[in-house]
Image (cartoon, rainbow, N blue to C red; front, side):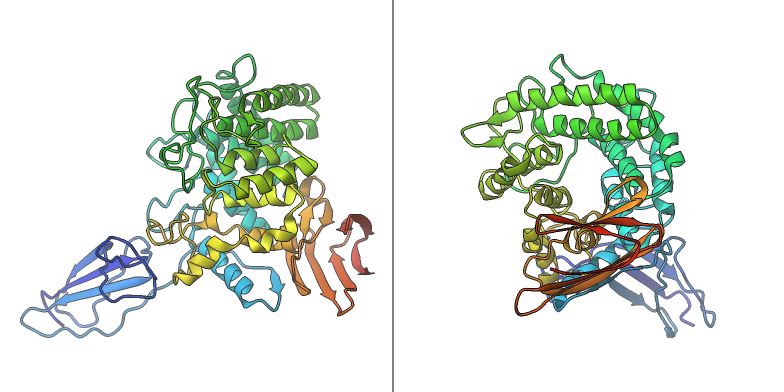
Length: 503
């Protein structure tokens, strides 16, 4: 019925107040829905049906109806979930409900950002950005074990390459967008695949792409190895704080055109590419990359290290500092051992630094572990706790929870990796996950168990501490997979199948 009645369906992730802030997502009083709109004019027949031609993303749906001369009967309104058919093949059991909530929200976020390709977000661009996708692929390896979308992503980004050697920042798309550091992250994404998936032929087929990317960057390297005046948009992170120096996600350069944050990302790519080339027998190319990396390390320390502040600066003038430069200095081994531990603490305790957003905290937490401070990981979940406190059911795009644009960005779901890799301690110890290293960082947890998929089956771990501080550790590995348990500085051999320790 309801001939000539008009129906409007408006969709939004969150509602806005008068200051154009979202506030707590559960609150609706005094707020306005601003979002995509579908409009229908009814033809007056019984049982009319309308569905959108493309998916709509929403937490809130506003329905506006204006009838004409006859009444309209609304029989039903409903939504059908669509997305890539990932299945969560993990378990994670503790007495901390908060940790379970973080995992559930992360998994929901990751699923909503995966369709025909990975996407940065389902509401806005719906594009497969390399920076986002690298983390999303790791979530797939650790939570699902399904690597098909990851292989597809690596291939599509490889196919986006320009003649100069760099890739698009996102692909597929009909608009060019070039973020040179994302080309370096594509090398990192291939290295991740090499580490966690047993498919060397696929990795080998992509190495021409890594060589072209590094050839492009080599054209901008000076005699000391540092990059100068890299073109395009050098986005690294929506850094928090110190906004005078970071412009639209880009780390500051000095008057000489160099940036430690960009240099360190190239250094890391050389290290990863060297390992890939060595694995396929291209030792001469691997050695060349390592020599370039060695020169860059020396120049980075000489140019950016401030001995008074005991921090790496963002630029040669040493008038701008960020967590990002110091995170990358740890991850690339520019500083190691006790020096890395000191640097991490110095970085976290210094006030005037641009801070890592929810996205770049993925790398900050890897630096935490590499610096030997992994047992503090569970104390570094503030941004995720804040999202939950603000009524979020998926993770926001940046750390400004009240004003973040996108309410669903899978690059924030890194706890779905680290709860297994860092807390439970399950990690690859050889290409293709051929060997396993178990090095848990339990913090103050006394009882925890979990499992995750492995290319050969399932890895299961269980940790239980009694009142006398005696630990019972049970580890089950897939058939034909061996490994090592690292506990209190000592290593214990793991055989395929069941392993039990009392320590």
